[in-house]
Image (cartoon, rainbow, N blue to C red; front, side):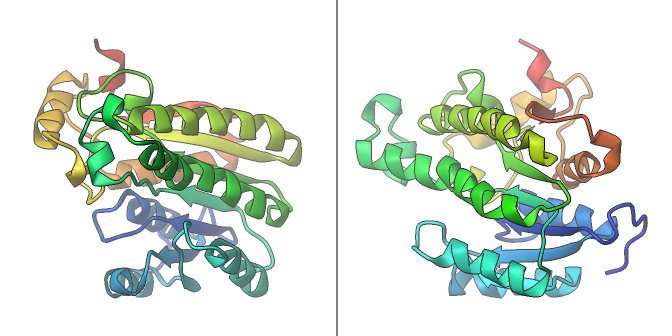
Length: 258
């Protein structure tokens, strides 16, 4: 895949969270590639590899590695591969989230301690762990992105445990932005509107959420994965060199309407 506007030429991006071509992470990877960046991609396991590998080939990814953040050693292995192939890193996209189905669909009061801890570890703390491994490789500064959602700020029916978890993720972005700023590393929480992804399919009445969000958005329509991807790509360029620590909404303006 050739870059059509190589503003990110020479930059190297790790994108975590592609499940298929409807994934937000795929939109980010495609946008980075279109702007000239080199890519490292991950797949959750061997079952997921058959869906992700063709996308990695399409995008001309330099690295494709397995990554389940709950498996000890796999995260470190990804960064070892990046260090060995590239020696440095410029962008990191964290687009993974998980909660056990019974804890996600039973309401927050009924969420088990184990389910809450699992959701927090995979969906939030794994970003902190990635940042710790990525920062030493961002020798010329860089950008880190974590995917949040409106349910971190306001109550969204049926979002359940993921609301508090995403709120923690957004707070983590602010604190990481503060800690990593002196190194020229910028950290962003990206909050897309509801999108038809595999992860969203686990939410009850998600189709209703899509319709309501589109009706509420001042622009009259929802964002898609490429809208999210190009927002991240812009934030990774020098044009956004003084932007860090905030939550960036990519939702057609739906978040401003009560």
